[in-house]
Image (cartoon, rainbow over all chains, first blue to last red; front, side, top):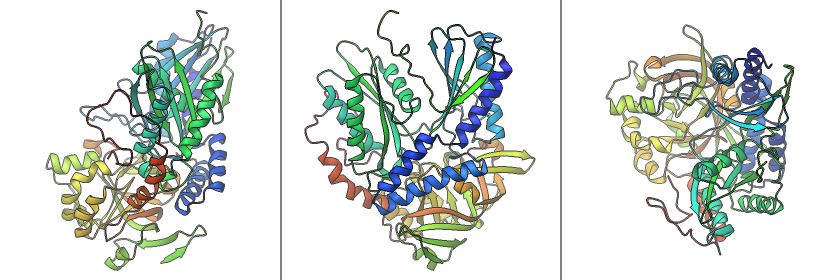
Length: 309
Length: 227
């Protein structure tokens, strides 16, 4: 049985590592962008972004003071047994968010939407958000923590089959024109796109695509993978660098996820995840050992299955 | 005072409160490092002062005139003792409506934040007050900015507004870099960037049809800002 204390310690450690240590795939991509960027202002900003990654790691400071909306993605092995059940698991995750908000510290960002009351611990109604997925033939639990901002870079559009891929490209460019000016998205960013499903599902998939796939990862569907690459080039041709200065360093990657849609519809969600990519994953095995990793491994073949099984 | 960085960006060290000459010498795209006092304020503070008409229990006009649209990652280690490892800005455009009263009433010389204001706000509000806008760089440089905070000198409305919305009076040293987005003439670096980018951006739209379903209340051309 996976012990609650092991989960608590792992969840605390995840929040700390996510807040302070940028994933290596993101750091090396920004380094490459800095080498290639020719605009004076954009290049200066990229250099400072790299300096900031180092400062955060050296001093053990959060790389960004905007905690965003701290959340968890939990992948439950079908054979995993958790002490106290899933209710205890959720309580443990909420505890870890409150503990690390004080210990790192993180900015207490979460307030009641009407009264604006802040408990100063990032815990409240539906906070932190916990999302679940399942995995067959496994006795482990994967925990991923994500600290992502939430004010800019997200959008939704109800497209139709007649809009098709040109309509999707236009929406993609629109989201760039909207949110990359002045750097509202804090680009360079990973752009996640969810296509199909219902309104809520495509927006959820867009979020997961932007946060839960490492850079360079391509969708296993070759047609979708080709579109991902085309949109990376399109996004970096739009003329934006970091902060909306002229340049060609705006898009770290594009990740697209599909869900079966209404036969008459093609809803699309877009989410942009900034260069302060605060994400970290741990696998807690049935014997209570843990293994930390950079790749969230969220989009498994089972998660993307299109059959009854 | 000025120093040229290897990347061709002029770096400026300013002691606060800054002289009018210092403020007037700032050029668009300069990188500025601040020394002295900076105080934070965002929606909670503006709402309390201008909507609820509460006078701050501290004379804000005596803080040196540099305000920062942000809130820190902060923890009260023991009563009155704070750990502030990191600080990053929040988007300034949404506070534009408070700026006319705020700049004049509290003698604000420098507004620091994310993303600047729309051009007419600079012309109509900032220029008459001799105020410049400095944008944080990249926006996620929390750790670098955290290194420039010497200590929390004071905090106002911590209980009323919470840690993220209170006014934090920060003693700073070599705090930066902040980039000059708007100078005393009200010119804007972001506006210049938009003008340069728009032709390239608009060319990419060629052959891409407008969506079948429209939505109300939106701008209808990609070269218009949504703010």
